Length: 516
Image (cartoon, rainbow, N blue to C red; front, side):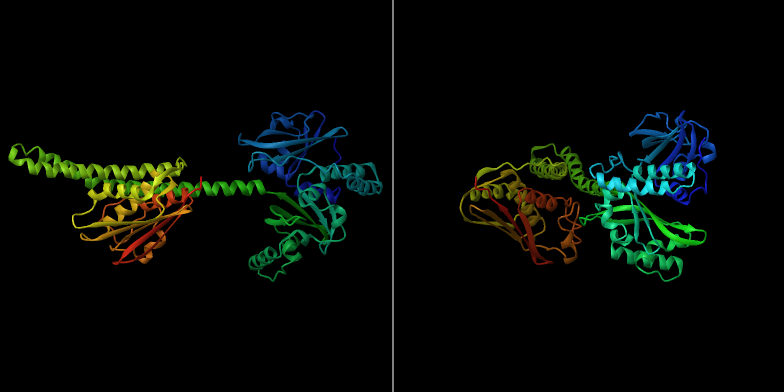
């Protein structure tokens, strides 16, 4: 039979009622005698429903010999909740501490400060003094119960006076905040662990909510407790070494009748939960971005495929009509149209495949010795078929001839930049290509006198699927420059450009060349 009952001891009531862990008191057989509000809320049963039932009703794997292990709690709705169970034998009964692990896969390894024997001895001495003042055995048993909670609770627990001066500082607070008890008790206040700017912001928040002025200090921490209002909020705690971590902090007032005699602050480290929330938010952002990209892909792909496919279909139909020798020139025209359309489809698919490889991190730099001038000249000759009849490509190379570079990535960069210059230049436009190589870097410039890039579009130029506002009537996927920028980045280079609408654009790619 338990001697605990509400009102026997104010300290017990506060600790038991406001603990941010589930606490059960059981008999030797594992039947529940007491259940605090936290565990009631966690499992969905009232104290009356739990009392007299075995712990295994909500914790199937419960064993009175359990010291510290992860398990599963089954709530009233028959849902499972991951928890950590810690059991402490106490006379003819057991204390069961239950930590909700839903927000994190594993709670911080429960440990108490074992290497500071002096500090623990001081704690024990304090509580032995309190116990010695007990008027009867029941009072001593209650205080032993409080001491067990005090030393085993995996949460920061601080008892302070009416002016915030720290009176008691539990082992978990020492471990999490990095301060020995002797450095804070009767020396510092609750404000020691708080950020001043955050206190100011919270004071403004409470002032607006409560319709009264709130000082950005102790009052910001205690005003709601003084008014008997819920006072559990997320705060940032500052450790002795200056590092910070988020806590879910509950500050309650200790009262003697209607008179406030102090405060108790219980803080639970929620770093793991906040990390999970951040990771979830990042994942959701990526998912939203992916959905947007999928929509853009479908829109652009359907538009870009439609024109060449229509060309293939119409030319194929007309070819079937040209059967005589005299129709040979007409057949050649349509065969060329089909060839161009197929090449266009191939380029589009290559862009999509390149993007996929970049996103998956499958692009690797493979260096080889290149004769820069000859290699670029050969690439430009291959691209002669892309330009219009009156267009010209001019090329000039300076500096050393042989350098070490990835030929394939350079090919993609140059062909994308030159093909863009061809597309966006006038029928008689000149595309200027310049390269300069030495043993430190390759500088590649591609310049045209075409339609240019609108100022508002320039900041988005290297984004996936982005197309300028003045290119609606020109074929393209909006991937070419994104791929160029990514390939340049992979080779640890940089790309810049200057452009003026209706006057032309110049791209400059600088790529470092390894010495070996």
